[in-house]
Length: 196
Image 1 (cartoon, rainbow, N blue to C red):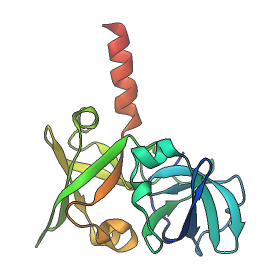
Image 2: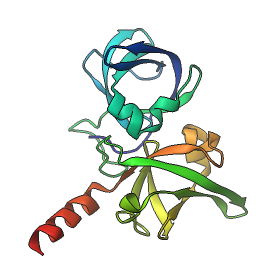
Image 3: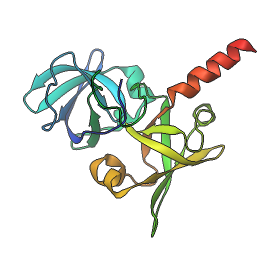
């Protein structure tokens, strides 16, 4: 389990096609304890470390993940948000994040004014039904609060710290972003549907 509190912006070092999909090598010099078999969220996607050489780790990405996330768009030099799983004795700072991306949204607007920065993201109807104002949303692995939600898009407010320490500060209109909706909303929908 993750919390959506990004620990480092890493850099894609290389991409290699493999029989099972693609091997992604990422530079993560500030993260320790990344042994083989460890989990690592890359732009909000839970992956497994399969090789480690000092500050660089390799992770295998299967075709299903490449189709359902923005990891298929990565190139050498791409910045990525990185987070290790939460320790059982750790502090819980964000919200419950599984690292199971529900779909890809598209940045439709970024507005800067005297009160701060807001980002509007378009998402399909399947995702929007789980997105509510003041609820939690994970965007490229970043735990955020939904500022407003419509039928086709939602907005998030971004503080300067978030823009500085995550890749959201590098996003432009039209960019694809990984979205994981609040797992509690998904469970409630399933339970309510089972009782009807």
